[in-house]
Length: 219
Image (cartoon, rainbow, N blue to C red; front, top):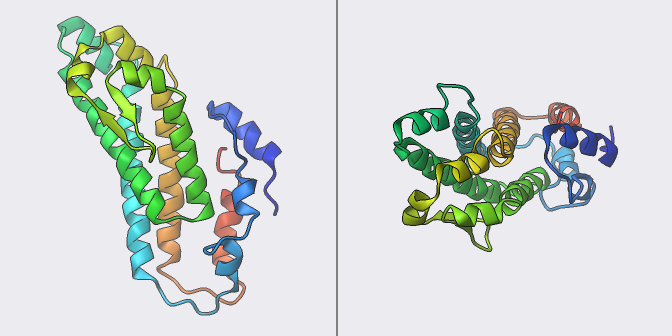
C-alpha cells in the first residue's frame, strides 16, 4: 500500500489540520531508522530502551490530548462558563500551564523517538502552535526556536477571559488540534511499544501490517 497526499490531505481537512509538508516526504524517503530498514531485520532483539521511550511518548501524548479536550467542553459546566459566573479564572490558568507542560513533554518525547512519522507529528504540533503565535503571545505564551512553549504567569493572568476562550476554547482551533494530534501520537506510540515486546520474522509482517493500517492516520 502506498501513501498518497490526496488521502492525507482529505482527512486532514476534515480534522481542520493544515498539511504543509506531506507525510509522504517522510515515509517515502530513506532514513537511518526507516520502515524499510526495520522490515529487513531478522529476529530483532527486543529493544527495551525504545519500548520505554514509546511508552513515555504514549503517556505524555495522552495527557496532552486530555488536557486540550477539557478546554473544548461547552455549556454551563465548561471551564469558561464557570469562570464567567464566578469571576474566578484560576482553574483556567492552571489548566493552561498543564497543557503547555504536556505539549513540551510530547515534543521532547517525539524528538527522542525520531522516526519519520514522529518527525512529521512533531512538525504538525509546531505548526499548530505557530498558527496561533500572536494569540498565544497576547496571553503571555512564547514559542522558542526548538518549539518549546513558555508562559509568563503575570501576563497570562492579565489576559481577558474572552481572549482566553477564543484561544483555548471550543470556538478556536488550538485546543482542538492539540487534542487530535495528541490522540493520534499516543495511538501510534502505543502500537510501537507493543511492537518492541515481540520479535518479527524476516518479512516483518506484524510491523508492516501496523504501518499499513496507520498510513491514513488523519482519518
